[in-house]
Image (cartoon, rainbow, N blue to C red; front, side):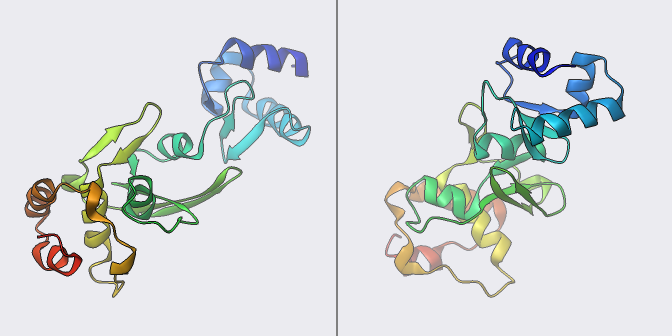
Amino acid sequence: MKTEQWLSLFKEHNDINIFHINHLRLLTGMRSHSLRVNLSRLNAKKVIKRICREFYANPFNTPTLEEISNQIYQPSYISLESALYFWGILNQVPYVLTCVSTQPPRKFNTSFGTIEYRQIKKGFFWGFVDKGGYFIAEPEKALLDYLYLNKGRHIQLDLSEINLNEVNSAKIKFYAEKMGIKIDSYLHQLGSG
């Protein structure tokens, strides 16, 4: 296909911001090798942007890193330091987008930024909200995910960096009980009991 044809295809499907190579194969009817060569050339010409292996951004509807995180590794939601920062609980900007998944841990260095996935039990995969294009942990769940996933790693939260104004203490206690986390000592240390 010529560049103009590709641009027409992407423009026609501008409601989609992330294309998987299989989706593009269906839309174009191209064989795998030809499709990969075409996409590689388009990426080299900066007509499209390769996100990571087998995923491409629509030039007419560029995705955010948050939207990418929910597409390239499923199921997943943004949590841990990234969600804590999003909700104003941590004031230190994380250098990678942190997510949780029921899948094994992975790290993707995409052309939009780095995304790190930590594995959580299937029974703990809840407590997130839909932000229209991606899922993010509720403030309480993000904090509990952090505590749960770091409990044996000798990683401590810098208590001076925590702001619990956005955390519902009744909800965090309820969620902590569901996850088997003893939260009272943490809340006491933070001055919110």
